[in-house]
Image (cartoon, rainbow, N blue to C red):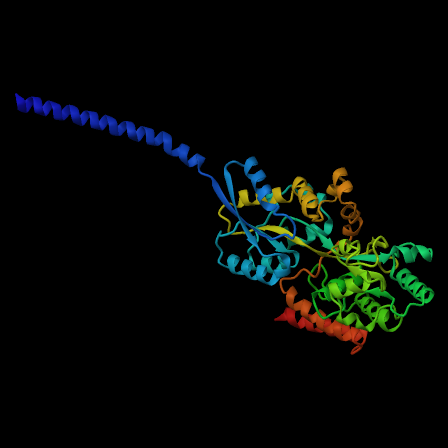
Length: 435
């Protein structure tokens, strides 16, 4: 009997345990999918450090609020003046072909190199075709490679012409639109001022990357180093015309000093803000310095205009700036693309413009009334950025740049003629691209 009772108790106990196990399994089926559904997608954003306030964390929080299923980790890279270190970090990270970073900021001149390496996500499936029209043309060209958009524009900088507004007004001149007008105005003013320390036109002729930037602008809208098919065309008529102008500004018209071959951005800026130049080609950063009484002798006497062009041609302004790209090996490409698009949106670009004066790559943002009141200089740059032109788009651009720097430096130091310069540059670039 006890045994029977005992057996019945064991049977009952087993039935209870089995029922409990089935209930647990049933609950697990219900709970596990819910837990999976609540698990957040994690993205990593690697962005360069800006010179202003820390802007990225706030935008990240805004993005996470719009996308509660996504969590973004922020990795701050060095500022742009450490571009070599940024480049090395990105190359090392992306070459591993892992998703260690999902979205990152990239110098505009690195797109061909990274695109050829296969590290950039093709953004075309994530962007409406008509959306491209909402950016400056040069900005879209910069983030494109081999017919595909492989990045999202962030901010833009470009070469521009600074001029002494007081001197042009004194002699009845308007800002020059052509190189002939600039040469004529400089010669007239130099003759009238009789100031041996005053120069007509200062630019950057040092054997460095900025010399290539200046070359892009002298080439204008009709010229190029490479055509759309990658053919070397620096030695065509437009290339020879640009080289001739660069030489003549120094040795024929004598409105640019021979010392221009030692100038990069800052030395050339110092000549202008000390009051010793009528015209200066430089970047947007010069404006604030020119308005600072501690740094400048031309406060309130400076204007800006697009880079002049040859008669019948259009202005070209060398494009600079950092952009956004998505790692092709991201584990979450759709969500990473959404983050890049958000950071490039009108609202984000307005935020960057208001907080750290980053020039938007969307023309419509410049029409914002609050921005116009807060930063009228930034808004005035819209007319300059319309002509923004990228440097040669090629995965071997760094080597092409070194060839151009070397050959055009010889031109500026009067060691070879304009024709010898463009012919030598073309021959060496062609040889490079055959390797």
